[in-house]
Length: 226
Image 1 (cartoon, rainbow, N blue to C red):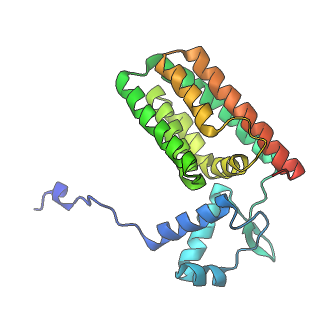
Image 2 (image 1 turned 45 degrees about the horizontal axis):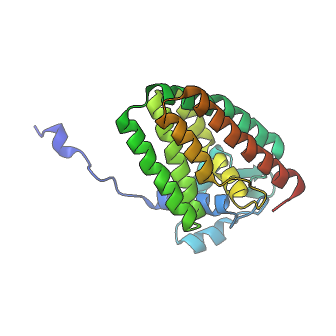
């Protein structure tokens, strides 16, 4: 009988569905597909070079993430992100991320801090290159590490369900000229508080970051400010 360990797939191949999912998700988050845009299956098939089956699977997946709405007699469109929805997302983030940062700061080891610093530098690098996609990805990795170090695994599962909409909001606020501090500056303050093992400052740094981000998002979503 074959050893089960010899059957293990070391490098899982990326499927067409996964590639298509990543492309369409990124197109929505970046604003290539704008809120309210109708997503035509045939056009997506042609653009991506995949079958309708793949496109339909991707649409269902992104609908579950909250990026797409299926409108009766109209079909799938890019979901409209209102301030009413966004404010709830920021409220959830405020509750979960401040506590994760606080607990992370309490127990972070030298190894943990080294990992966070490396991710912070990735945020800086992406910011200098003005690569919004990489900035969003690096910021998400930074937060994931904070939750992991704090052992807030269930809380991170909740955040993950909102990640696509969180990324969409990040893209909106990154592009807003009214932004007072860069993402790197905010993340640096969070990192420094964790580096100093200062729970109170870590919690306050996250709170300030999210308060400013929420204010910018509200301005864009309610007034159309760019």
